[in-house]
Amino acid sequence: MHMATGVKTPVLAIFGPQRKELWGPYGKDHTVIQKDWDCVPCTLRGCHDDGRYSRCLDELTTEEVMIAVERKMKQIGAAETSPSRGK
Image (cartoon, rainbow, N blue to C red; front, side, top):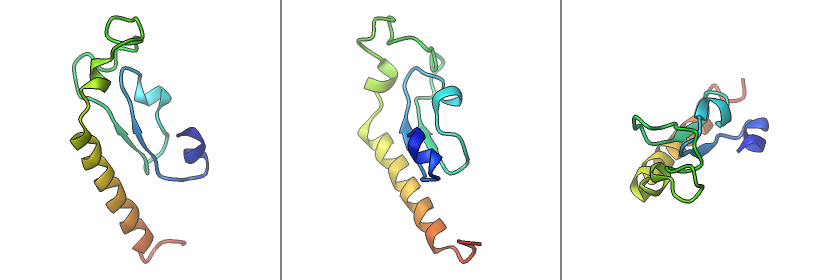
């Protein structure tokens, strides 16, 4: 993720209990998928701070991820076909 942002490649990152503002990709061309729950981000190593189970990751559905992927792909496609690209 960090190397991709360093070479200006659009990123779609999945985050659980960590702060996306600290560890996520910087810049406007990136997308972070993260549950919008009261407990997120908790910054713990899992729900019981034991490193085993993070509900915010385990309950992130394939559908939620695929919706974000499809949106990101459309965004990238639109940027590549934009007449202002390369200016």
